[in-house]
Length: 199
Image (cartoon, helix red, strand yellow):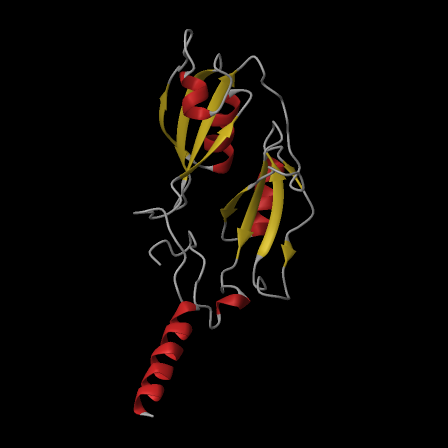
């Protein structure tokens, strides 16, 4: 009887802990370092991120190409004759970095995906006041969308958002949640936030 109880206890402990097993991870993964974006005009992109958004240029390098082999294809999955004319890294406040690429390639496509397109994306910047951000962006001639839009229901309640676009069509967002979001109450995992980068 004691053996049966002991086995049942061990089995229950094993089954209980199986549901709490942590997800696999890339060894040593610490967080998001940068987002890379290919832009049509490097000067325009750097000017936009530094003179409008408020990021700071950290470094530029390049060009990179391989006239004879398949290095570009093997390393980056692009056409073997693709050329990276320039790479510029910018730092934006307390967030991760943005890497701007100026490519040319025989098979290059000029696409500006919508947020609803597969592969579409946007970059969000935390701001203290979304309404002030909208007024500032519009004064700079930047196209903004509807908003500021406060989110009042659901797990994201507490945030206010506004979408806007870079001159070449890149989708961006201004977001603020000064008192946090509703999901945080009792959440096991809280999202990283540039307003409290130490957390």
